Amino acid sequence: MLTSLSIRNVVLIEALDLSFSGGLGVLTGETGAGKSILLDALGLVLGDRADNGLVRGGEDQASVTATFEFSKLPDPIRTSLSDAEVDLEPGEPLIVKRRLKADGGSKAFINDQPVGVALLRDIARNLVELHGQHDDRGLVNARGHRALLDRYAGGDVAAVEQAWGKWRKAEDALAQARAAINKAAEEQDLLLAHLTELAALAPEAGEEDELAGQRADMQKGERLSGDLIELQRLWEGSDSALAGLRSAARRLDRIASEHPMLAEALESLDRAVIEAGEAEDKLSRAAELLAFDPSLLDRIETRLFELRAAARKHNCTADQLPAKMIELREALDAIEGGEAQIGTLERTARESALDYQAKAEALSVIRAEAARRLDRAVAAELAPLKLDSAKFHTAVIRLPDDRWGAGGMDAVEFLISTNPGADFAPLGKIASGGELSRFILALKVALAEEGGAATIIFDEIDRGVGGAVASAIGERLARLASAGQLLAVTHSPQVAARGDRHYMIAKSSQGTVTRTSVGLLDAAARKEEIARMLSGAEVTAEARAQADRLLEQA
Image 1 (cartoon, rainbow, N blue to C red):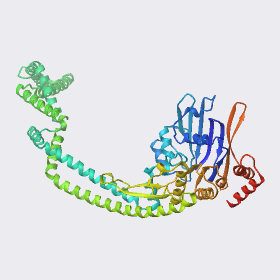
Image 2: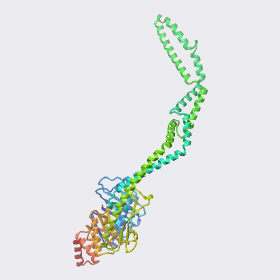
Image 3: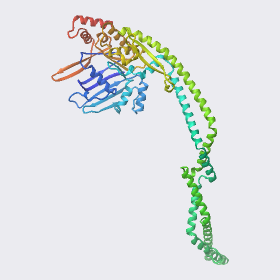
Image 4: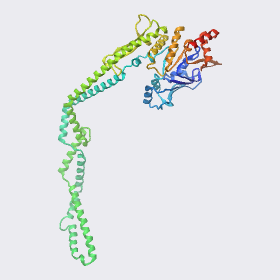
């Protein structure tokens, strides 16, 4: 609920800090005192359009801060804040601030975090429900009527939502499967041709790198072939360097025992023979690897060209060609086995549709019965509110198939007829301002606060009525407020007397400066204000006595 409201430099309000509590709070004051300014200021934090005409003359900016506290933050508000990445700790109050500049533009904040005005409008419907002379929100908006009736009826809307989601999922899966099969069938010849071509090519993973390496080696061999031939000539034959080393080693071996130096020389010569032998082996292997074969090189280059051309054709790498073959086979297999899959998906979709329709039909029956109960409950409230000739009707309308949804098969709208024999029409179209507010009050009482916001404000709901009707309005406002928080801007002493807290709005002038102030009245001041409302400018003893009686009756 709304626990505090701080206003700075809004039109006639220079500085105002108000605290609120649960129950019924009434705001009174003489005509022109500035009640509309208070509501305009509150409208800023609820996301209303920023009008720089609200900035007090001579000031650079205006600001309004509203604090809301909840035992548990409503789920829609929590979801909206989470989606907007606004952090709010459990139990932390929700502080909404709007700053308005005199030269245009505004900024919005929630708990000191900058936010867009759209977020304020999004959460506003769960913060404050305002009903006044030009009400175009809340219960007047037909978009919320079905949800209100469902909460009043107690039907299992969640089951219908789940069944709808399951049906949609099944239909989407069926549509996707059909689209895939149709696309594959259209391309079947092309798929088969591609698969045949790749099967003939028989690509292998890693083949491109291996072939590229072989080609590089052969190209090197072509450049080094002259040097390799000459080296092979130096190391081969009876007069080669290696043969000479071996012959010398044999001769030295026969005389090495004659002197230690000869033995050491033999060891060195043996090592040279071994190293030279290893060098010969490496040269031989290198020659084999780098052997240049023009025909083999041509075959390798042809194979590389074919692999890379196929990769470009299928928009993949050469290593991915084996996987592309598998993909093509699966696409062709899907065409052959697709009908069986489609049959299974069709059965699932049919069963899901029947389940949804059964649950939605059951919900429609519950809605129709609840609509009749609601009509009777509202009708019982109309006569005491001086709406004797009016009638209320909850229309539950079956929608065409293409408009069914998660909320079921029905549209719901609250309709009224204000005169005998007149046709029913939407709430906001045929009721005058005062009638509309009283209709809404009757509906709110009948709904027992189903779907209401944290705070409800009625702006001059008692305009044009008095006596018993005003008393009936006050009694119903108090009844509604007993379960939460309700603020009523009123000219009726009967309504004012019902308040748990009474605020007085006053306007004062000092020279050329005019200010609006709001104060919480104590018991004595409250009696005096109700007496003024009863008698006018001059408060009489009789008016004070009548004020006492109203307060006692309340």
